Length: 395
Image 1: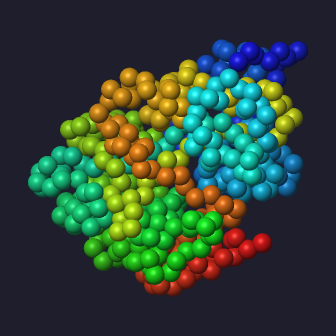
Image 2: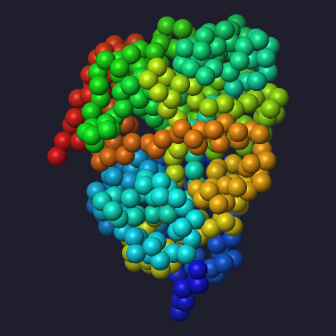
Image 3: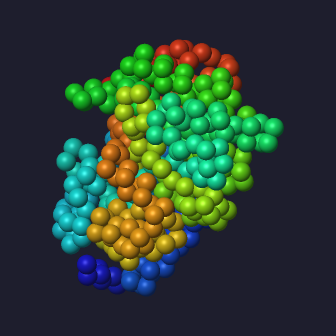
């Protein structure tokens, strides 16, 4: 795509919620390449912690101080478009030469009412890490179902050695796993007819199983109710936990501490009683305001190019959003990615509707934590989630 001519250097800013050192290294690599390709555009970046992102974006809308460009996760698209925090890029994207490199499903998560609000930047593919050496020592295979998962977690837990079967994320960000487990038990949020509700009985069964890993079986670290990203990663890397649910983006972090294929392996997320739920989460970049729309679009569209995707992959391990780029030998030639490739065949997008982000963070997570620490029952927690969801989607 030809560069847009500018009379002088244009400065734009970019909000994101990258967390790890590898993510920052990937961002720096993309920014360096972009600067070489677009010396007339200066991009400054600002990290907004994930739990604070929506609050800061909402405040920016009120104060009329939105960033030029922003990272956009699928589950936040509905809320961001509802508050007017994303610019409609449909015409620009339809004219973009690289659009056809992305299948239709890549655009689904960033499209609302037929309008496209961003460009796919990279893909998170859910999978499970497991201590291959521990499993081999115990003579057991990686689990393929929740039932097998529970059995394996019990067998591999030994508090006397400081070992636990599973690294549960009960702190910040843990709501996503609760939602996934409920859907795996037959309680999705969005139903086939488009209605949004949480079915009580399967949701109770799901929460009872998931919280029971802590309250009944004691196969997770005692710190689980407060453990967020960094804690669950460090526990796995330092030999405290045998299994961990996350996504492909943390692979390079794991490889700094453990040897892939020897000390740890990867497998698809186990299946629940109703279905196997693993998310394919496409991260997008979009414009939050159109003051510097040409420069902003040059920046967000650059992430969809092969140069940017491969550079980001090399630093982070994150999958390219473009299938064309995903055929790179560095992916298909690496056996550790086999689980991700398999997951691409059954993985599903995260739910998205106005109110989801707020409900997840302010209702689902606290209710889940309350069960973990014994302050409420599973039934009351689910009832609280149901009430909160009804309020979140109320017109």
